[in-house]
Amino acid sequence: MTGLRQFRYVIAGSGFFGATIAERIATVLGAPVLVLERRHHLGGNSHSEIDPETGIEYHRYGSHLFHTSNAEVWSWIRRFSDFTHYRHRVLTRHKGRMYTMPINLMTLNRFFDLDLTPAQAAGFVGELTAREAVTQPRNLEEKAVSQIGRALYDAFIRGYTAKQWETDPRTLPAETIKRLPVRLNYNDFYFSDLYEGLPAAGYHAIFDRIFADRRITALCDCDFFDVRDQLNPEALIVYTGPIDRYFGYRCGELGWRTLDFEIERPPVADFQGAAVVNYPDPDVRWTRIHEFRHLHPERRYRNDVTLIMREYSRFAGRGDEPYYPIDTRADAGRYAEYARLAEAESRVIFGGRLGTYRYLDMHQAIAAALRTFETKIAPHAAQFAA
Ligand code: FAD
Ligand code: UDP
Image (cartoon, rainbow, N blue to C red; front, side):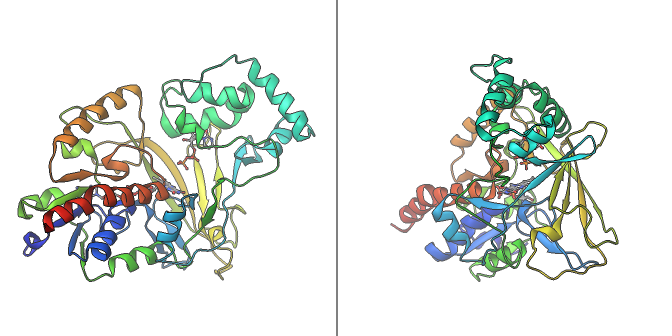
C-alpha cells in the first residue's frame, strides 16, 4: 500500500477509543492521522446500521446504551450527534414470568409474592443476606449473595452468569456484578448516570462525522500487522487491538468471552414489548434477546415486521472477536506481564478495551482516550515540534 509512510500518527482500531484519539489529533493538533481497521466497517463494537429488509437500525454487536456522568465526555460526543431522551430498562424472564432487572422492589415483591414497602423490604433483604454471613465479598457470587441473598441469586444471577461466563462465579471478580444496582424502590432504570440517551441518527452517523475529517485517513479491511512494515518507523502508534496478540501471545493467552448473534425478523409489530429481555434460566441457551425498535420509540418503523437478535456467549478462540475480558486471577497475572512489556515499548500507546484488557463502557473508552491524548500524545507532539 502506498503512502502509509507519510503518517506520523497511526491508530490500529476504529472503535470509540481509536476514533476519539483520531479526532483529537486531527482537530487539536491539525495533523494527518491514519486509522487502520481490520473489520469492513468503522466504529468497533459500537457500530450500528440500518437493516435493509426492515428499515430498523440495529446494533451489530448487541444493544449499546449511552450513559455517563462525565460532563466532558457528554459534551464531546454531542458535537457529533443529537441525543434522544431514551432511558434503558431491562426485563428478565424466569420460569415463564417477567420481572424487572436490575433487582428492585417490583422484582422482590413479585418473586416472593409479597407487598413490602421499601422499609419492610430493607429488613427482609437484611435477613436474607445475614444468612450468607459474607463480610468482605471477594468474588461475584459473594458480592451478589451479600446484596440479595441466595434465592434471588439462584433465580436471576446464577444461571445468567453461568451462561455468560461458563466460569465458577467464585473465581469471577466482584466488580463484574457491581455494575448492577440493587434497589429497594420501584426505580427500574438500568443506569443511574447523570446523562443518558441514544444518538438520534444512530451510532453509524457519529462515526461518519468523526471520520469525515479530511485529515483522517481511515482504511477498513486492513489489519495493522499486515501493513506494519510499511509504516513510518518514527510514527507514534496507538494500538487498540488485543494486547496478547501484539506480543505474539508470549506470556500466554488472555481469557475472553465472545458472542454469537442470531438475527430474526418476526412478522409482527412487537415481539417482546421491550428493548432487552434477559433469560437467566439454564434451559434456554441464549442470555438475552434485543428488539431494536424499542430503542427508538420516537421513530416510525413498519408495523408488519420487527427485528430481534438472540445473544449467545462462549469462550473466544484466536479467530473469534474478543468481547468480554474474563479477568480471573490467572488472567490478571498474565495481563500484568503484558502491561510491563507495553511500558517498555517506545512509540506505541496501548488503549481501549482490548489494548488494556478492561471492560470499558463507551463513555469510559472515550474518557480514557481524551486523557491519553492530553497526557501522552499532545506532549509528544509538543516535543516533536520543538
Ligand atoms: P472496540 O470497539 O472493540 O474497537 C476496537 C477495534 O479495533 C475493533 O473495530 C477491531 O476490529 C479493531 N482491531 C483489533 N485489532 C486490530 C488490528 N490488528 N488491526 C486493525 N484493527 C484492529 N458500552 C456502553 O457504554 N453501553 C452499552 O450498552 C454497551 N453494551 C455492550 C454490549 C456488548 C455485547 C459489548 C461487547 C460491549 C458493550 N459495550 C457497551 C462496550 C463498548 O462496546 C466499548 O466500550 C467500546 O466498544 C470500546 O471501544 P474500543 O475502541 O476500546 O474497542
Ligand atoms: N447479570 C446477571 N443477570 C442479569 C444481568 C446481569 O447475572 O440478568 C450479571 C452477569 O454476571 C453479567 C453481569 O451481571 O455478566 C453484568 O451485567 P451487565 O448487564 O452489566 O452486562 P453486559 O450488558 O455488559 O453484558
